Image: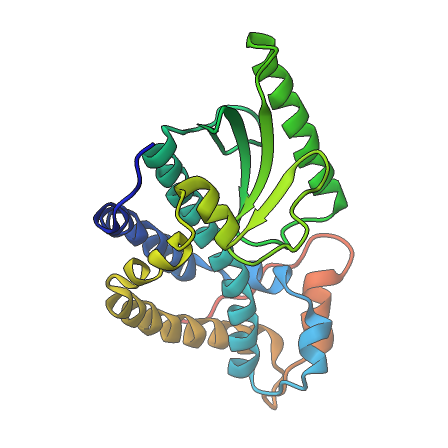
Length: 254
């Protein structure tokens, strides 16, 4: 088995981290007020006593971006994990439903479902993952009944103090990266390369972020503030929660 060098890690990150930043910026610039308002709980934001439209929009946008960025960066980390396993173990991206990665190690066939962090799903989603593990293992053993198949839920960060779940293992953070890299310190080796061009990328994002807040705040005030300028919370709640189709938002006069 080969290892993976710092140079290989750096080259992979530099070649692929830009995609995360580009998708993040693209999603920000394409965001529509109607979609933002429908995706967040209006009662929660009312409880915070937000009275300035721009403050409300900033809170809504930050909550939206936080969950969206977790998904986008999770996609990047999944790609990195597959690259590491390919380099170290000759692994490959799996074609099996619900399985992201397959590789051979210590005379066992590992099938891996990769998640960003340990708290990724409810009981139904975990049950679906376990069913996917059983199906994939059954297909593998049809070709070779004696194959030792080990199912792993690999989480890119966090920890789980009881990784043995009976019919699969849940390895998080250091344990997961060590499994696929054969290096107990690998989880720290990837930190520095992730900062490649981060300041330049974030400066561009922040400039667009300010413009988007201004745009959405103006649209929100035009649609959900009364003549005095106060937020009409009943109208806001009705837009996201009333029966039937949501009304179209009024366009700003040009």
